[in-house]
Structures are given as structure tokens and as C-alpha cells.
Image 1 (cartoon, one colour):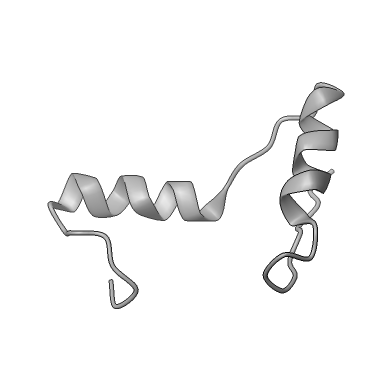
Image 2: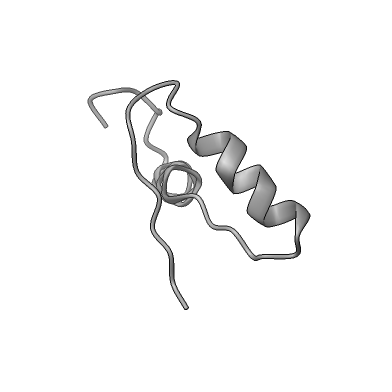
Length: 49
């Protein structure tokens, strides 16, 4: 099963992800993946990149 979580700033997304993770559910952050890719490319992280 794949569950996507979206929402506005400060809407509780992190709290929900932490709840899932505390119960052994594997979680993946799209932002973390993008940051890793930018780093591999040698691109500085910014809102524009």
C-alpha cells in the first residue's frame, strides 16, 4: 500500500508521519530525495532550485 500525505504548512503532516514511523511503517520524504539529488548534482539548495 502506498499512502501520500499532503497539506498546508503547520497542518500536522510531520506528526502523522511520525505516528506511522513509530508503528514501523517505512516513510519516505520527497523533499529529502530532492535535496539528495541536488547535492549529487552540486547544486546549492534554494527555493529556486
